[in-house]
Image 1: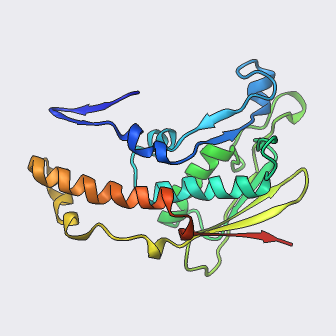
Image 2: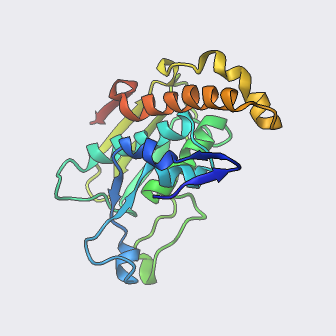
Length: 215
């Protein structure tokens, strides 16, 4: 178990975020290139997402759970893993939006779905992941992502009710001190408890998400 050390402060956030079940997903290219054995999935945890994003917050954790819910609904058979290259993702907001921009990168990291600059596959396009991520411009209040299987055309929509996530309360006042490096140990601890408590709520409260299978 890895730890992040900052001076005398030591935070093992991997332990905290193991409460979220990881996503298991196959990658045909990884299998073809002998990175993975045939049929063996990558295991992507929320801790991996934190490393990709460089931070942990309700937006990052919400994006991880959006991908988690979307893939679970598209692949309900416990003996069948999701497959990168067979998953198309469409957002309900533009890439320029700060929320959709951050979330789409995380969803792309998990699912492999990418824009036109994504991996085009091996010879003949095997395992192609480019042109699998699209951005919309709708009026949805809450972040919404649509997932589709290119092999079956099954489609699901996942909405994250971010407005229902509790705020960090008075502890938010310490953020500026944390940025400036002037926070006391007590202030840092109070902020961490409140901030990461919000993230843990997102990782455990299924009611913050609505999953709709599209006809």
